[in-house]
Amino acid sequence: MPVIIDGTNGITQAGEFNSSGSFGFKNRIINGAMVIDQRNAGASVTATTVTVYSVDRFFVQGSVTSKFTAQQSSTAPAGFTNSLLLTSSAATTPSASDYYYFAQSIEGLNVADLGFGTANAKTITISFWVRSSLTGTFSGAVLNSATDRSYAFTFTINSANTFEYKTVTIAGDTSGTWLKTNGVGILVRFALGAGSSFLQTANSWGTGNVVGATGTTQWISTNGATFYITGVQLEVGSTATSFDYLDYGRSLIQCQRYFEQSYNVGTVAGTATSDGCALSGGSVGGATTGYIEGPAYFKVTKRASPTILNWDLSGNVSKCNRTLSGVLSTNNSTSSIATIGTNAFSVNSASSANANIIQIQWTASAEL
Image (cartoon, rainbow, N blue to C red; front, side, top):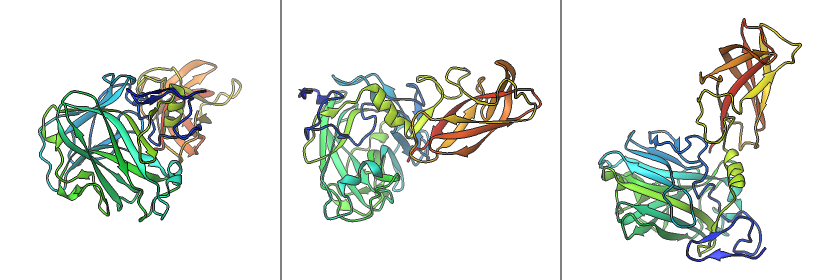
């Protein structure tokens, strides 16, 4: 199949050759076009002091809770259908120890060939489309898993409320420890605001746990400020190439290595529905008022044994439905998650209600 590159929009269609003339995983960012949103189905999430995921694989975090929100948006440049939208919730002036950012952690197995931490470290280029209500110099950072090796980069937004294409080229780090396992290989952060403790001079490798570069725009300081981003790509080389746009099915599979749910795509976990539920337990002849246990299988092998949450079909957390020969015996029955592997887990239930099958909805998170 010949390569067809749209020079205006910077897109290579799925199934075409990449810039090296072969098929491959050119873009190390997963869901860079922001099309997969399993958890939230487009709903807004609020950044807190712990990791919160918006669109798949992209998470937000802030040192102070509720200072900005994130959600999938249909506002996008030509050639894309979605973006990630960040919105400031207050005019926040960061103190020295404050930080606000969104990020993606890239699995070490997916960047092992870059050779970071060795004399053969390869140059990488990050590219993306960005739009903000604010103009000025913005920043981000590339870090290792221990956050003791870091490179702060900058980019300039010239016109407010206009999508602009940006590229950043970074020489590979020849120092430090960079995981080549199923842990965090490379962490890419985009700064929304940070204090001096989390900023460093741009364009050189350092040793700090940084969010961005010194002297750049504090987006978080403007109430109601907006920031859209899409087409995020990290690739080998010193020149940005066309965006490696995967078909929806393959993009979903990539995301499901880190997060999967039994619910249909577009249904938020905890919704009262039987669609997609897992059935486990015995046979028609195996009815019991006691203990029932059975497996639930993942569609995609997980990065590591995941954290499982489950609901009954009415949306009650850590509960299950017990049924007998297809007829509901009881819902809101206590359930427990037992053995968890990378391909499946076991769920069990004990109740006075006679049943041979238990039904649950579930989510499985193996995020980095």
